[in-house]
Image (cartoon, rainbow, N blue to C red):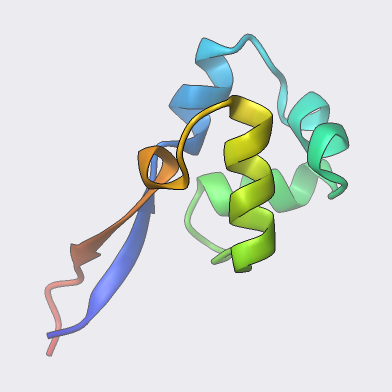
Length: 72
């Protein structure tokens, strides 16, 4: 069974009142990177995932989780 990385980044970012650009500046990436992570186009590195968690003051597990992909 394969899994996909799900995330709640958009909801957590909105809860903090941050734009994609503001969050990107906090973690040192582009707004497009934040957009692609939110839309599950890009799987972030462990370092980026930890930076996002720190910027949002939540454990990384509150942002990212594994879900079955329905394949395999």
